[in-house]
Image (cartoon, rainbow, N blue to C red; front, side, top):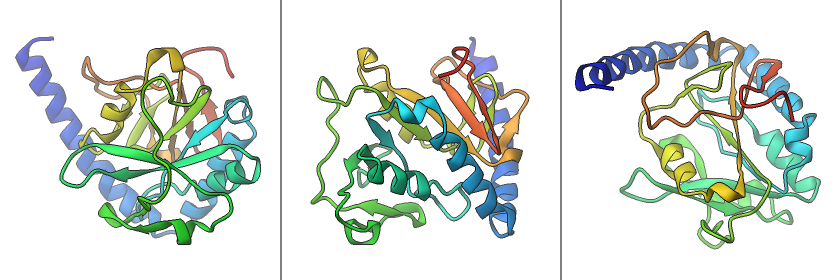
Length: 213
């Protein structure tokens, strides 16, 4: 990819981000957002991707993001390791921390950046490297997804950096989660963009990397 092609893709991404952010803010204020969040969570919890996971990497949603809190509750109830991210101050990096099943989310999280709650530093940090959990599934939020595993994030690169640091032999499963209107026929991507293993938008789950899990 030459310089002009790269700049053209960056410009396309910028326009898409502006458009979808506006749509997300409007949709999140309506009655359908909560219902679609529950639908996506139900589809995920009924999948082999969830059943086979020893650890579920979830997130605390922004006001305009799909809510996966019921997945967190189910994972803790089912005896799986559940983790949520915390931003490293002053950087575009994040760490994940294991949640404590004996405590409520409110007691083990605190206000963080981007209008979201983050895990307290007193919790155990998920180690990267050889002690990263096997059979982990990572729920990846984003602005827009495609059925063939492409994703457009918010542009800060938090997930790109974290995923790149996970050892390949751990085979972490990447699962994009979004509202039904966040599914596009195609998305502009750059060589460094990581494709997802599965995508759930609305009530349907797509498996671009294989025939199902």
